[in-house]
Image 1: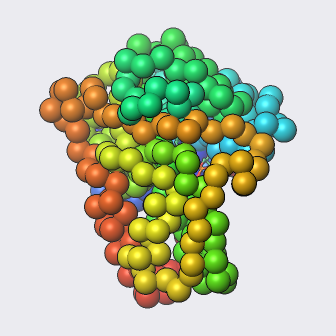
Image 2: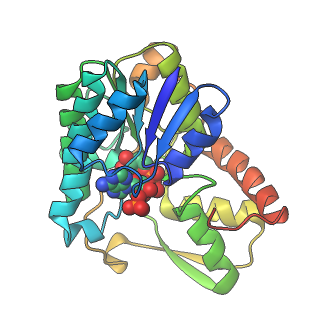
Length: 290
Ligand SMILES: NC(=O)c1ccc[n+]([C@@H]2O[C@H](COP(=O)([O-])OP(=O)(O)OC[C@H]3O[C@@H](n4cnc5c(N)ncnc54)[C@H](OP(=O)(O)O)[C@@H]3O)[C@@H](O)[C@H]2O)c1
């Protein structure tokens, strides 16, 4: 099977590259190697390679900066998604797009399934919802996976930020009134590979299961690594940022579970697995920003 990975230097893109390198013929492109906004070049590359599957990990992911940079965010996450989906359709490939829990407004009060209506609060959330729509409108052979609070070995993420801050600071103040489902990149990659192998089409929630707050999540990281730092819970209002986040955006993998194909375990086990791999990488001398 021939697979193209776009946005291949991001945290999810690199996880796909690593996991799939011995399972398929991989053609991966970083932002500088292939800009998804360059429609002509995207089509040309796809026609040269003739992939079976295109995994689109490219995205504008700076949620707060997006409020000052609305056009660029929408261009990358929506128009970019359209270019990739259309080019995949032209060469007969399946297209895979990753979306977010931030398409929801957080008012439901219980975990969101694929049957709930999105109502994004931020530019980032709106751009990702548009990206979903453009992806499915331009290629009937699409897979959209909504994921949330993503972390993994590669790139920057919340877990690594906490570990680094805990080494430098004596106390941390962490928001305790936003609830979501922290999700490990490796689990997303394994679930996606299963869906590719089954040739599934459609929209799926694909987050680690269960829910927590950023504060409780941090507490678990600190406890597991035995880090010497005090943490204090704060309210969203005490940590002002540009983009509004949903107060409650835990995802229920309803359709994966209904189909008996949910591989996403609970967030606590996923975090433990990640921390074990990450700690051994650090001991072996890997850099923290790999
Ligand atoms: N991170 C999260 O918590 C989270 C949560 C829910 C959903 N998601 C979704 O999951 C997917 C993967 O996220 P991630 O955390 O891996 O993001 P990431 O680490 O920010 O990676 C995104 C990659 O896309 C590249 N990119 C940006 N603009 C591009 C363009 N015009 N053409 C080609 N590549 C471009 C970036 O390159 P440069 O850095 O060089 O610009 C970067 O390497 C995204 O769709 C994201 O929206 C993420």
